[in-house]
Length: 325
Image (tube, rainbow, N blue to C red; front, side, top):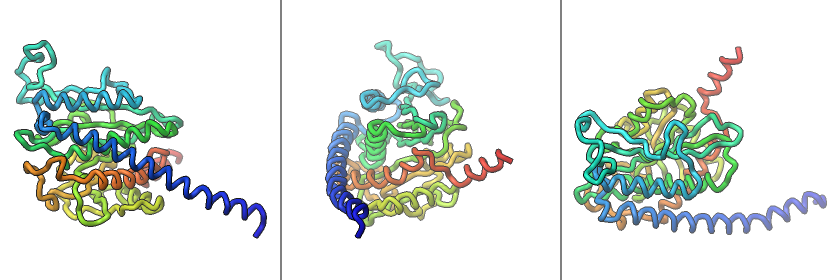
């Protein structure tokens, strides 16, 4: 064996344990972050982050402060990270509550945070999860505090690495349980033409008995197959597979973006059919597995990372070729 090749092999063998050690440290840090966030979002005092209640705004402010602390910014079309909106049935209510603050009985808040990219700052990847749940004793740990917590820790990862080519939007949508109001309002009110892909996170805390992350709407765009390929090439511990229930593609916050011709899909750890505590009082912190969430987060990060670094969805390649003609 040549001297150069021997040195390369030696460096590789020495570097591998260091990589494994670093990954172990990151995994434990992620687990601690997820645990802390989940405990806050599923606290009985927040009563499930119900829409049109002060508790929704307390949860939104918690996410806002977390995003600000890790260096995220308000998205330029907005003056703050809280995108306020209401629905028709609430239009006639007063704008302010008795204490002079925003009336939580009239308004909802999408938390929207922005991480500028480096070499492709005008192209965006949107990562989202819905913040709201049912309330009235339904705490919504798996649905969908688990998705929000995963999104928040992903945001911390990408903010710390400081080498993202594309810009990233992180959105915690409200009004999902009422009929996708937050994501629909977002699509209706902002120019989303620069969003290259939308990845929505749902129900990532409950064990489904296999090392799979399900992707809704397989075949609706090239994005699901691309995410699965990315995970496989990066040796992710979880396999990305097609969700067998077509209706879930139509019932999550990816749908308004899909209708606006953005490749948009939801990643799920379990479906509503597989989770016995779906929309039930047993969907509490004790119902989910933090270790499982950390493992799923690691796999999702590997699948998304190439998109952040400029990877194109196949139909984007075709569009760019057409522009050159």
